[in-house]
Image (cartoon, rainbow, N blue to C red; front, side, top):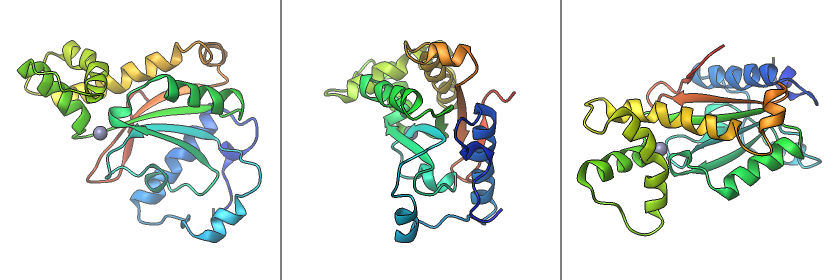
Length: 207
Ligand SMILES: [Zn+2]
C-alpha cells in the first residue's frame, strides 16, 4: 500500500480501523518490509498539524521501540513509555489529551515478555524488600498483578506481565474522561503483548 495511510488514519476513524492499521504496521515490521523510514523528509512531511490515530503506552525497555515495531511514521501515533507501562497522573492526562483534544480513537497498552519492571515487583514481593526512591512507586503499582497470580507460582513472571496489561487496560477504561467515549464505542482501550524474539504483537483479548 506504499505510503498511503490506511483507514485508521482518516479523521474520525473508528477504533477498529485504527487497530487494523496498527497491527498491519506490526506485520510489515515482522516480515522485514517496513515502509516508513525515520528520515528528515518524513519529519518535514508531518510538520503541519498533527492527526495521530492511536496512542500506545509501552515500557521503557530499550528492546521495544514503539514506532519501529508498529512501522509508524512521524505524526501517526502518540507514544508514552514508563517502566512496566505504569500509570500516573501525567500518563493519564496525556492520554486524556490525545483522546479528548486530538480525537484519537485507540489506546493500546503494550506489555512485553521478560519485562524487568514486572520482574522487580516479583522480586520485591518474594523477598519482602521494597526498593527505595521512586522505583518503589513502580513496584507498588505492578504488585497487585503479581499478588493476583501468586508470587510463588513458577510462572508468575509471564502471567503477571499479562495480568498487569489487563489491569492497566481496565484502569484506563474507567478513567474519568475516557469512560464515556469508551462506553459509547468511540474509543477503544486494548491490551497487547510484544514478543522480543519475533517482533510480533499479539492482542491479549482479540475480538
Ligand atoms: Zn518492561
